[in-house]
Amino acid sequence: MADGLTIGQAAAFVGVTIKTVRHYHRLGLVAEPERDSSGYRRYRSASLLRLVQVRTLAEAGVPLAEITDLLDAGPERFAATLDDVRRQLTERIENLIASRDTLHRLAHGDRALLPDRACAVLDRLADLGFGPDYVATQREALVLARALVPTIFDSFLTRLEHSLDDPEFVELTKRGWEARSWDPDDPRIDELASALADKLLANRELLATPAGFQRQPDAAARYGLVNHHREDQLPSIARLNVLVEAHLRAAGIGIPHQ
Amino acid sequence: MADGLTIGQAAAFVGVTIKTVRHYHRLGLVAEPERDSSGYRRYRSASLLRLVQVRTLAEAGVPLAEITDLLDAGPERFAATLDDVRRQLTERIENLIASRDTLHRLAHGDRALLPDRACAVLDRLADLGFGPDYVATQREALVLARALVPTIFDSFLTRLEHSLDDPEFVELTKRGWEARSWDPDDPRIDELASALADKLLANRELLATPAGFQRQPDAAARYGLVNHHREDQLPSIARLNVLVEAHLRAAGIGIPHQ
DNA sequence: GTTGACCTTGACCTTAGGTCAAGGTGCACG
DNA sequence: CGTGCACCTTGACCTAAGGTCAAGGTCAAC
Image (cartoon, rainbow over all chains, first blue to last red; front, side):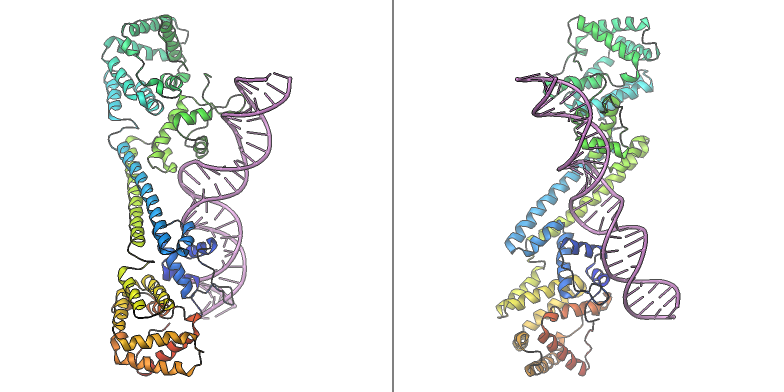
């Protein structure tokens, strides 16, 4: 009894778990105490003191790896190191707060990873009579665009809003979406491509490359991915777009190419 | 080229490392894309979209384990889960802030894990002519006391302050500390023990058990550890204390016993 | 003598990837 | 045509601070 506490008692007194005490032993933060005849660790006040010191620092957020140095250092380095640790904690806190704010925007207001303005455009698509599939695909393209070409996301949206103001263009786009169920060789696709190309050539603002586009590395490849999103599953749409681009190139308009 | 990006390109486009992409595959967060003839993964826009979605949530602090469910859930559960994650983040942030504050108090003001008032007492010990060894041992005992019997730490300090107001008691204590280098059987230890016991019996407030003492579990054992700190390395001091306690018990005073 | 609470060690698990190793692939340059 | 270099593949092991589980030894009480 007088020769010390068992590990469970010591841990309870200091307010930690047994496993924590053993962990500190293994890391060398607290020297192993003597063992009794049955191999049990026996803790005396000096061990408890060390345990308390380590625990106090650990609870304050000091990494265990630094605690040994800290307890062995003089008061000047003690304070300096603590300040250092405090700065690191502050940084982590700020990162977490930023995460939390992002999360807040995602949960409230942003619907499915997009800002309000993009959601409004998608709602307008639905109002204009586009089917849910089309709206879903456009939503995906917008999510992709925001991540891959963030610098031009806003002008991308602006162009989209513009295009929805033109009833003829809306009609052509709807018909284009119907083409997804046609055979890729259906001659109506060729007609539609001509009509779309004519429309675009008559309203060139729908084609304008936004300023700052080239500052993005791999801009053309990124943009191509957004523009051709899901085309691998929609061969007729893919062909339609190929034809439209061919028309435009024939008219001397360079299309960003993958 | 038209059949997809390699993992390095996909990772760069989305803004993560290759290892992160593979990690998401292994966790099932993003389905493995098709491989080309040499076994390279080839990413198309659908994979990139998924990668972007996962990345957005992960960056916002959502645990990876919850992201699959989140992306498959409807918008109502989406928002609810995000709120839940946000609450957990808030909790972690508050814990970190508390740690940082503790750290601040440790680095500035608190010297070596003790509050100002305790440091003042220790300074006073030095002023009264106690040697650095004694002060260091007392400092350790205070650190131990604060952790093991926090509820009575303040009254413990008060008693200590009181005792230092009594020059006779100070003298006896100093002489007690000198006894550390005596032989444990030195008869002067017996004399000193009598004198100390008389002094304590004449000033019983130096012995009073503080209120609330018994509310601490294992109060006596904890208190004993503090009172007998380092005695295992100071046999003469240990004997002195044993004798003093015997005197007090003989006079009908119960000493908390280990 | 047996039960239940405690102790011992060791091995594996957690998060979100990072690092290293050994080997295959694709492209440009000489 | 070989060579170098950058990229890809898998697999195994590492992080911080312990938690959990397993198998077995010990102690005190009934």
